[in-house]
Length: 488
Ligand code: URP
Ligand code: ZN
Ligand code: ZN
Image (cartoon, rainbow, N blue to C red; front, top):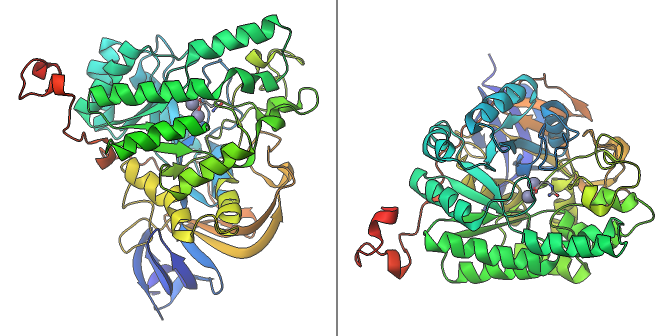
């Protein structure tokens, strides 16, 4: 009998901290040995000349989810996870979205049934909370957190999803008490809708005005306010999909004060600009997402934020809507910018783009690449060390990369169901050629080898990232006694 189920032989194994040429022995879905000259495996992969890295973790993607605007996204758990796998990602964390009036527990139950039936790689689940009732905060969330749903997203924007500051505090207080991490979509909705109305009144309906209405200052202000709300309650938080330099600056300043404020950005803020929304006719609709891409100087600033550690994670925020009447053009062939579904696809290209343009162009080193695409996601959301690294005892989730492979991006080669890519024609160097999920070779030679439903739900631990600092505002300090009972 072979010593291992699988041996990945002779590749350069790279983690967030180390790199070494060695074999990886896999048994029962876990990494059982690392070393040179390992005994034979029932299955062998020759990885000489290749890089063996932890599979990506995409901790922000919208799969089989109805958006705040009421549009079902184009990918279900099958197409979404297949696309993720082809791009070197082995775990996703999409959102079970509670819409107003719904029970969060019922939403999660339904979402899990969909995921269990269709996912081909492992997945965890965040919640989106739009209706933080007493029942949700007092009963449902504590139970869900105990069951491994330890992070939730709230919106400061959109009519259908927005929480006011009071509700945000209620959610943050619950997160603090129960040990969960709050993810925040930070944009000032009143600024956006005021600008949008003036633009529409002036006859400015084209997609580019989506970007104009989602002004940078609206992102900066809401980020500042979110951080202040978290600071009041000594509650860590993570600002998602940061695109504006001034929002990034708010995060940097909070981090410099020692606050537990985490930052996420996305490829669209590194590779797209507002000019893409200004393309001919309705084409710009394909690039409408919130917050919107900014300008070239903004891209540079966001790279700087990745290089200097302001951002811990780069996620795709894959929000796929087809360029037809089911998605972007649901309101008709010529919608105003306010009626265009928000979001861009990117689940498959996230790693290849960051590898090629980040590592390949010398903007980040390969360890930082692994960290921002995998390890830090696992740590922040309570999946580490089961996921996010290559070490004995961890899940055998790996992507084997040909660092020299040249690929010209086209929509046809991708596996999601969006039907277009914002990155059409981009020239990339480096590609994941084999992908291993819990020891199963799920992608090889451009083919999928995984059954629907073979992905397994991964409950998240209460993450270290969510632990309060123990440094509350003076007014609430238990030693001063005035407000102590509010929090403790
Ligand atoms: O435009 C975007 N990002 N759509 C997806 C939903 C969200 O807010 O992340
Ligand atoms: Zn968002
Ligand atoms: Zn999103």
